[in-house]
Length: 305
Figure 1 (tube, rainbow, N blue to C red):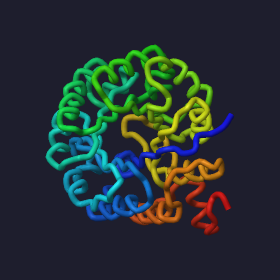
Figure 2 (cartoon, helix red, strand yellow):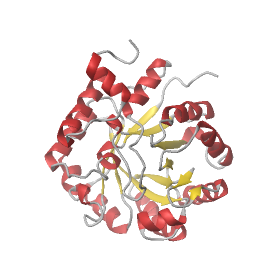
Figure 3 (cartoon, rainbow, N blue to C red):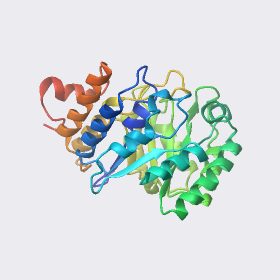
Figure 4 (cartoon, rainbow, N blue to C red):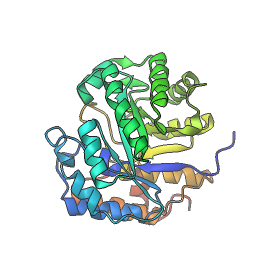
């Protein structure tokens, strides 16, 4: 089966990559990092989240970060807004795009957003409508589409029903979150089979974590399903404070290398991407888990050479 000519990657490192870190990165260093990511060829960067600093202190400087970045033409700068307060804060700084959130697990919804699934849907509906009225695009994260850290396997009928409601609200895209990184390729096929007639693969975004090391295999299966949009985090940073045990997001470098090996265009300059990852690795004083990143840094060889 053939692959698409190109795929679109949304870089979520500045938000999803930092929200679970044990230390907070200085505001100016975040800005510098996002500016470096802007130079890589990425077309969408999720920059931060307008959340309570009580719950996510790592992102307490969201306004300062968003207003401090040097926006690059052709790059869309997104931010997560979990509630009305976050939406108003995002609107004040002129975000290009927002992401709202719900889940297919009652327990995860309660722990992550302090409300039920129904409560989260009622919360995001007016935010989506208001954003549309202001001409701002809205992605909606639908978390735990395969499994939940508290409830186990998820009923695909629940995923389908929630996706229908999100689209009825007018969201421009649904970001399907495999939140804990346990999916196998057959789970991805099962997910898209369940969404048939509701959400086309081409219009979805797939958000994978790499806890079990199978994220790239899941991406390959998703490509066969028709998916062309993926979230990733440079270096493989990530994790969720409400999903214990979940590893980081699938690494942007690994996705780019995977695509290059199959002749799929991403529009991303690998050298500049590695430079951006090296910047945040040094700041966090950690070892980033991305295989492609480590290979290039150690051998100075591009993945497809």
